[in-house]
Image (cartoon, rainbow, N blue to C red):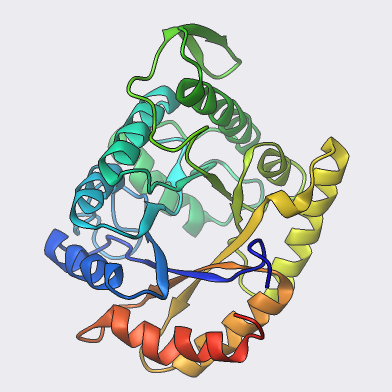
Length: 305
């Protein structure tokens, strides 16, 4: 395989119901297992299921702590909700994490919760339980997507421009913007955007992303959305091969064979950046279990890996 086609694997620990010690143990273990190249957190202020009073550690402060406690893994948030933090503040936070980690940040971002046309009441209740609790307005999807595009532009400028600058967008306005110190990675940390909105979100991916995470359920869906992204890239004159294709899957401890089969289907469909999210209760050593029962057999079955 070429470097662009090489498959990489990561681990994701959603913070819902977990303690810092729980998560730190998994990340430290993964940091010692070579088949894991990246690790990810989840970005919600409250649990999405069960009592709203359950534990849910904030993602970016936790990521900074984990950056200081690991040495090798690339790391990020899969994906940051653009609705929860002002993007200029987020740019500063991300630059700090990149400095702490010695240049290991992959910057994941997405539209975040919004009013989705045709969404069922259960989905909107999940959005509102979080946003209402933290005073975040729930805006229409078109506005949230526009805000994501502006955020990607201004965040990149904060990471790369040495002079103070003003930004006059429809969603954000900055005057005398500055971000020092800059991220360690130059010109900036890789930008990963998550989402599958065919008309607008994937256009933002084509314009701004170095990596794209597709929240599809099947390899067939992934293949479809990937082809739509290719069309957006063609429309703006960008080589679609410049965007690494990413997928995350939930892994059940009682059925590793199903996960292996899905991963092989996704790789065949063009996904090369794969994140495994083990579902609690975890084995005693979840990272080692994933490596032995899922990743190593998949790598053995992929020609040239």
